[in-house]
Image (cartoon, rainbow over all chains, first blue to last red; front, side, top):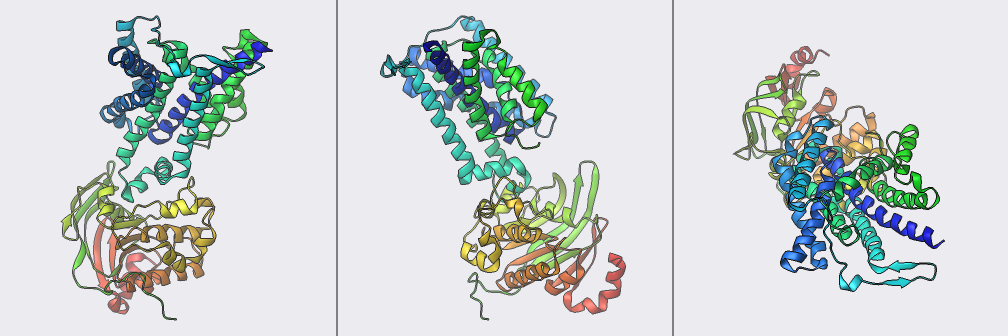
Length: 287
Length: 247
């Protein structure tokens, strides 16, 4: 039973990363109509920024949680201004190819300097240790990741579904021309949206650094599963990506316990099943 | 019934042109749609563009709003050239646009739709004033925008641009597909706005409706303005008009 709980916890942790990453992908896809294959690389950059901050500047994990998403978000906004914006109105394939190329370049550069093995990043002192919950031992850092991710996801959902800024965003996703004709600078909003989505990826990268180490290919390994999560949840749906992200993490955890051989494929099997029954994803609106 | 003023402003036409369009040409991709549109709108007027389907009336409004990619010529608003400005800049100068397809957002509820356009200058209508004009909207604030009836959607589309403080409104076929009683309500609204000093540029297919609200008409054909006359000259021009519109 202990092993089951442990696997469930691992599942929840993975689910946190899935949710943060697929949430960003959903926001970006909704607004820019781009399938952001660079997402994994930007997640990795978030972890590396945390690593540099700590090792070069002595800047703690807590500051990294704030600074890494901002720096990587700025990097993303530069990408959007200089490259992605020219893809407006073109087929999805172009965005996919461009962002895939960006991912390969970014990962290649990091691999060139840091190799493929992981760099250690210590758990911050305040989150070291664990608590015995009676039925299992819970490392504090892992509990923190799950709860913090959940809070960030819900805050993002609130921002998009319940605020005036979010209303601009939803309206511009539907009809950018009209929203612009109301006096809103939609191109700037698109840039900021990309920055937000990318910032969420970087935040996930910082959260993951103490658990998974900091590796140039950490995002490449994760991103394929995250895309499956997005497809299952439905492209462009905010709550859909959050719920699906956590749920699939847990389902993976269960599978690891009951039938470990399938744990790496269960997400993709589910993706096929969902696509067969509901091609727009579980919560997707028709495109 | 004495109605309270919506906005404290001098009403009626002051004579100065707020919008002057000269030799406006516009393209959709490769197709050349407008071939030199010329017309003007004075402060406080209701001006209607008439013409057959595909004549270029909607394209003219969209060009003024800056949402047609390729355009040339001159569009002066309050003596300022806006032909090169982006549509968000144009909106902030005080022009508001209500598109033919109404553009109600399905992912927003009625309140969010209503509150969406940002205030571009002071003096816009308050929510209270808007609900006086369109009482139906108040009952439906939490409904999804596109769940409203066609008439309610049209009212919402007009209502939301009244909030912004823009004094120059462009309405593209506001009566299209609506029941006579709703058309009447929209007619009353336009007359009311005019009496409050709003300037309105209208595109209409429904000539009978237009004749109840317009001060002047321009006839658009094949991407050009080919004629224009005042409402007072309507009876003298009615035969010509029938030929133009083919009714």
